[in-house]
Image (cartoon, rainbow, N blue to C red; front, side, top):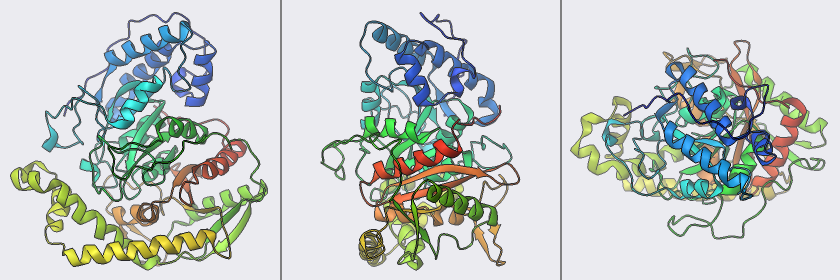
Length: 486
């Protein structure tokens, strides 16, 4: 794996603005407006982000590769196009980082693994193509837990406390956005890998409906659970990125062929009448008290804005762990089978152990997991559309704030213990199994100053409703995005 430090930028923007805070602190929505108004240069913004990378990356460990020279070239080209009246939209000239599972032609895709040393794709992933078409500026590739098979991303540190994990597997992307070393980023989510690090780093993470964003050109962990989505500073930012990325792609067999919609349409609309399901089981079991209190307070804030809280019982929760692993383990092993047998020593110990375990997974158990998953999907549709009728389910994203880097377990108030990985995947996995969209957004900090996240889960293709509610909450309670200290 290589890391290319950013050079001292030498480009001079054709127009600049004296901004406080500095451009790398601003949200995508803010920078897009300033760039369109020609109050901020794409080169000035990109230079600010690259300077921030140079200042904090050694401590943060968010990036595998920094593409500084190419980023400045892309920013200069965006600046010329905008000056000539060819503004492509809100992502034009905006710096983005991509999780190092996502192919970029000519840039290594390492999956943060020695197995992939020297692997450089010759074509872009579908999402990379869409970002290029939108005029976004690639600053580099961010660390993942090796091949996305874990929930901590050990190479990366939490943006708010380097003694704590960033979460995974999209930890590099979340830490980069939180630290100001990318204006927005993309991650992947197989069991919570966008939402977990988003919650632990005080940023927004959106796992869309399964099939809404193409996974073509993205290294797979578990094909039936994998999703690609944005990590941003605000909910409004996430809506802008989803707008650019959603759409049918015949190269992805799971891609949904449906009319494109405007995911920004409901931002700012009242939430009066929307029904928010609050689980009476599972989602608040074995949860740190401060996390539970912050999420319940956030639900109260939504009701104060006009939403209605509805207590609900979430079905089939006793099967989540078995069905999640029943899909992920055999599917991951099938993907890695050839390299696992050829170069097993190049995998890290934890990932190799999981992949080898998949060799012994019976096909009958995999079929049972699929059947149970189908029943779970149906029961969740009934949860939303049944007699109680809810628009979203509101719950903690993860049951605990960021673990220490040397921590292996959590001890819960009832005295039970749980591994860090099992704890982090427990509340996020249901949205992967059902394919329902889920949005994680910041709702506070614990008494150690570590971020707390709430997730809103909706019925399939209800992204606009999730974004509407999330935007309403953050507008009332977090109007200015917070950047982690250097």
